[in-house]
Length: 204
Image 1 (tube, rainbow, N blue to C red):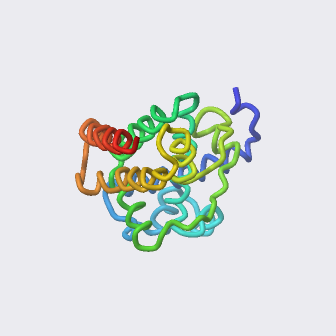
Image 2 (cartoon, rainbow, N blue to C red; image 1 turned 90 degrees about the horizontal axis):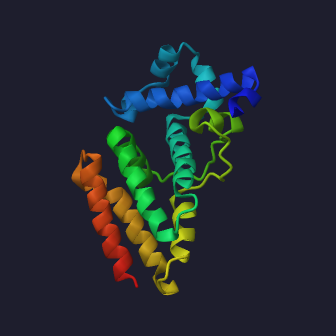
């Protein structure tokens, strides 16, 4: 098994980094990011605040880390799928993610809207990939455009409509849950499907 190839040090470091993320995830189910202190997270995990900052430079970097793990997960889900099916799968999986913790999603959208998500990469080690996904995921970390644009470029739509389709998909992914407030997976995914149908069929 891949995990057996890791040293104890690698496993401990990766496990703690993921545990920090998961602790933020749980806290965000009941309070806003601004109300969560590094001190509170450190106390719960029985680590020092300095240890937290050895992994993340700020609370915002935890959100970036979540997005990067999400990008790896999405690439796993769409592996081998044709472009259009891959787009629907990405939206389906995103709906599942949002249902698990809508507040985490809202914090990401708010951060993007107010400050923009910096392109600062949070390194995801081989150990972190194995502990999170059960295998050494070989994909490059990327954001929404890095995953979506290559799929759009393979669709049978005019090249001049590629950017229109991209912006429409971006708005659909992020705006729909905001307008629906606390959506459940089935309702949100149905909305996603309807809008994807409209965007993709209307672009041909």
